[in-house]
Structures are given as C-alpha cells and as structure tokens.
Length: 525
Image 1 (cartoon, rainbow, N blue to C red):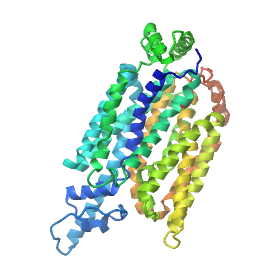
Image 2 (cartoon, rainbow, N blue to C red):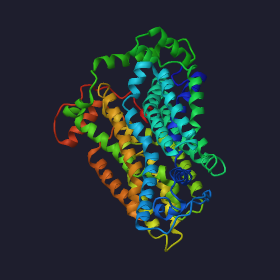
Image 3 (cartoon, rainbow, N blue to C red):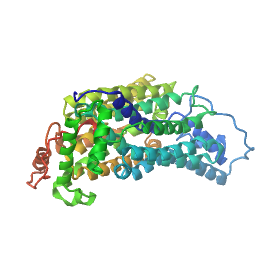
Image 4 (cartoon, rainbow, N blue to C red):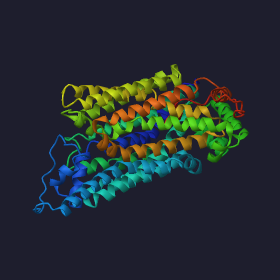
C-alpha cells in the first residue's frame, strides 16, 4: 500500500469528525444576523417599550428590516424617574445581549481544559458522542427560547453550546491527526479549520430574512444544531476508534491493527504500526509536564509566554468583533444590505482558509504571522477612516467594506491558524498537552473579553474603535518580530536554542530533540 492512500472509510470518518468543527463555526456566527430581532424579542419579554429605541439606539443600530409592531400601554409624559428607568432598561438590554454573545466563550473557557482528558477516559469516538449531549441540550434550550424567558434560555443554551465547542476544539484535531496517514496528516488536519469557517458561512446564509432570520423563525435557526448532533452521533457508531489511542493508551495491539486495516483498506499495516510504536516509545520516555511547571521551569517559561501572547494577538486583533458584530458594523458603514455583506465576509474567510492550507506548508510560520498582522494593521486603520468620514463622503462606506474583507483575508493567512501550529511546535511530547490546554484556555478567555466588551467600547469610541485595534495589532506585530522564532522544519532542540538566543542566556532546553515528524496543520483548532 501507499502511505497517501485515501479510502472510503477514511473519508467517511474524517467527514463525520469535522461535523463537530462545523458546529463550532455555526455557533460562532449564528447569533450575528438575527441580532435586532432577538433584541426586539428581549424587549417584548421584559416589557421594555419600543419608544425606548432612542435610549438603546447607541447599541442597536437601525435595522434594514422593520421590527414587528407590538402594542404597549400608553406611557405618560416622562418624569425624571421614568427617564432613569428607561436608561436602566436600555442598559439591561445591552447587558443581556452582550451575555447572549459572550456566554458561548465562557463555556468554551471551562471545557477547553477537558477535551484531551475526556478523549483519554472514554476514547475519541465515545468522547465525541458524549459531547453531542451538550450540543443537543444547548440547541434545544435555544430552539424553545421563543416559548419562555428567551434571554435566560438563550444565554443558558449558548453557555452549554460553548462547553460542547470547548471539548470539540481539542477532540476533533486530535482524532483526525491520529487516524490520518502520515503524508496526509497536514492536509486532513486543516479540514477542522475549514469546517469551522464553513459553519460560520452557513450560519450567515440561514440567517437571511427570507430563510430563518426573521421574527417568525429565528428560534429554529438557533435550534438547528440539535439535528446535527443526532446525525453525527449515529454516524460515529460506524467510525473506527483511533488506532493510536487503542495501542498507546489501552495497549490493545490487535484492536489497533483492526482499526488501521479499516482505515487503510489493506491487510498490511506494519509501517503504520511501526510509526505508532515509535510514538509510544517517545511518550514513555518523557514525563508529562504540569501547567505550573511550564512557568516554574526556565526551559519552558519563555515558550509558554510567547504562546500565550500569540493567542492574545489572535483574539485581540479584533477579528471576533467582526464575526460577532459584522452586521452592525456594515450598517454603521452605510451598507444598504448589511446581511449580504456579512455573508461576503464569511465567503472570503472560507476561501482564504483554504489558501492558507497551501501557504503554511511553503512559507515560514513566523513570516506568515507577520504578513497577516501587518496587513490587518493597515486594514483596521482604513476601516476606521472610512467610518469617521462616512457622513461627509458616501463612498467611504466602500472603503470600510473593502477593509473588512481584506482584514479577514490577512487574518486567515497568518494569525488565524498559525498560533496553534507554533504552540505545538514549541514543545516536545511531555509539555505539549499542558501547553496546548493553557493556550486554548487563554484563547477562549480573550474571546470572551472581546465578545462582552466590544459593544461597550464601540459605543464609547464610535467610528474610532478600530484605531484601538490597529494599535493593539501593531504592538503584537512588534512583539512577534523581536521575540518569536521561526519553527518550520526545526527540531525541539533547535527551537529551544532560538529561544535562548533571543533571551541572550544559556539555560538548557527541553531534553527531547525529536524532529517534528508528527506535527503539522492537524494541530490547528
């Protein structure tokens, strides 16, 4: 057999696994398009009259389609007390909407530490099945939110869906990396990231007014993941367990060979088994490192700090502000059909994720990251310039829109996938699990901060908000230029030497100098 043979079982198994990644992306984007409709429903449920629109308008920019007309009791001429109550109600709506967006990241933060652990306890297949229980529960809460206290059900459902996505962000890349042939591990691994951005795009499409993004059907859009969870669970029954898990964790060689034969479509799997045995030897030769040891051991301290900074750069670049709030941004930029512009962002995101698959294997990680961050810096400036001069020059709306498209493109070229590659490549087998868990947690924390704070910052800064992100991107770009080493094609010993050189010291590096034979895009989350 050849190492790069693609079998029907392998295709089916990878497709089934990335359905979870697709759900991750769908959950990121689904809350965006129906923003005004859901906020209007919150007002209805909480009894906040529509004539408070002016008080809330700094947060909810006028929608392109009309809100349903709702009858309220006649309100007398406002008194100072009524005005105070109106402002308080407006603030409560703002807070509830921010929580509806950001509670997803809270769940992801909590669960990001447990994906690998759950996979080891139950096996990769059963762990994904167990995670689907969370996806189903979260989807049902949101799907029935129109029938009850919608704000409570949506915030709870988003939190539970976040727990699911936190688990999946570790389980899916791990499983695909373990079942893929060596020569295809990188290409198949990137399908996780591609499925995420495809999920974002699909969520934007179903959010169109004439599909599900309307006052009658928005709750169905939020509840759709229940069907995916059930569908994937059924398909998982027909997927083989990871041969690496069976051999390295359970020491069941016969079952590992049987699984490999199904995946490779042939009876001779000796080459794959030799690779797995070598990996088991590497695992057993190096002790696991705790999160505390990552900071207390001088060999790991600088790599983990650089890892955390790379993930902070990814999230604080402003990319999720665009994913979560792009419809509002396009509205403020004067775009007449902002939902379609948002879908355009999703399409560009998907296309350039596919492009990055080829670029990341040819160019250096550090080089692509710097190119991406530099491009995002200039795009953020043009974005804010377009918003600032919009009232004087109508054509500035096109400047802002083009800047957003290019911003997303530069993000997917470098800062999107690269931090996950580099964190995996900074560490050998012993410290890598703790480093990846901490990096994932850091990523989710920053995601949450942006999700919960962006609208308040946007209200305060107005059209100047992306100047703030431009400044942040510039600082992280300079940090990357001076502090981050190149990792492509280097051993752990060579990378450790790079860190020592940048530090100017001579502390010993991690003892394993194993070439990064098993690493590649499969580590992308």
